[in-house]
Length: 335
Image (cartoon, rainbow, N blue to C red; front, top):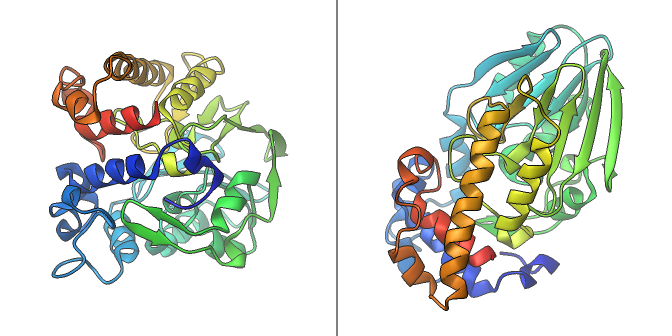
């Protein structure tokens, strides 16, 4: 998955192993066309059939599949709105200073998202903030830029968007110049707009090495990006620095910032709160500890997966993109 510096954390064999298991899972098929999942685990690369069924453009197929999800609207505060559904959760801060948007959905959703944002009022699109580099969060950067918005992200996000990546059987070339962040930061950035104080800060490598959170202090809302998958096992992108211990550490850091009234916006899943974030962190810690114990004892990945260390958790956490055996594979390969 790329040739970037973080590839040293996990061997290419382990990355392919993880990707093949994801592509071969039944849950993967709910997000991708069925042909992509067919016997993928037996293939070295890419993790879908080369002939007789693979779409000509698996990225377009993925965008279409995710973009077909209905878009839901949730009011977080008088001037703060969450749009959920087709590729993560987008948050819009609206007011006389303009519209400040966090994340952008996948490309096919742009007309629907633009219409929803227009429905908030006549203020111009001012700024887009990317929580990390993945396409389902940055796909409409270019459209926002062309509509007049600047783009703000962590410096690593800009770096990743200028590179080629192979992710889940899909190849992503460098993003066009108009989709790149127009401003970046290294550690922390503070913004004031529409009566709100926002803090943006980088989290040590967790889901990727590009993750940030966005904290709306007056509204008591925290956009966690893909560091938080509410109610489901998370995907961790080892190819761009992600690892399980970083995910746990990031969730722990976020928990220290919130109280029982905080609205916690996950990268994927329904709106959460402190209790949901704590359950998610504790689940990851439990699985990490179980897998680490077996890996430290010299067990191979296949043996650990066969032992089903998430069997008692799968009914609750295994209903999203990542089923239990895949999450065990991800954890094992990022320890």
